[in-house]
Amino acid sequence: MKRERVSVMVRAAAMEARDFLESIRDGVGAYRIESWPQVIPDRLARRVGDVVASLRVEQRTSVGFLDPVEDALYMTAGLRRLGFPASFHLGRETVPTTPPAGFYAWVECDGEVVSTSLPVKETYLEVYRA
Image (tube, rainbow, N blue to C red; front, side):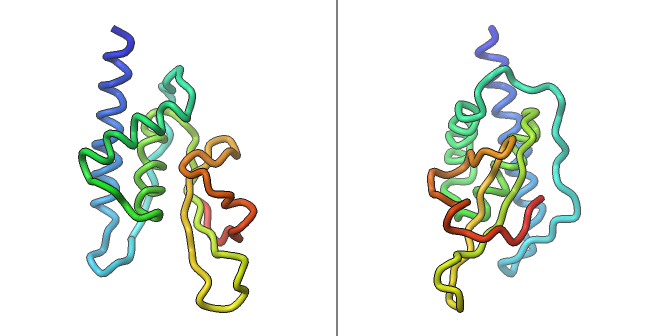
């Protein structure tokens, strides 16, 4: 019964994350974020890594593969809906120091990067956090 409840909660969070992502797209490649989803206090008694994996499965079936920015937006919304204090981060590559340095987005929970295995804290200078 508990497993079914978790599955239903993850599915609901995934749908809300998809809706959030669709609502902030402005149609010309930018995003208009007026407010971020709040952390819902009913936190799942699961490791954040397990929840990220479950959200990824739901993501792939509902919206497919996303670029790093949209993936991080989606994951932040989904994790917050499930009670995790997720934060969205955008960083600029530290090398090269002049254009065309790239940008990358990731998600953290309690100071731990949870959305990628890339060493983002070492190779990107954080320029935005929400």
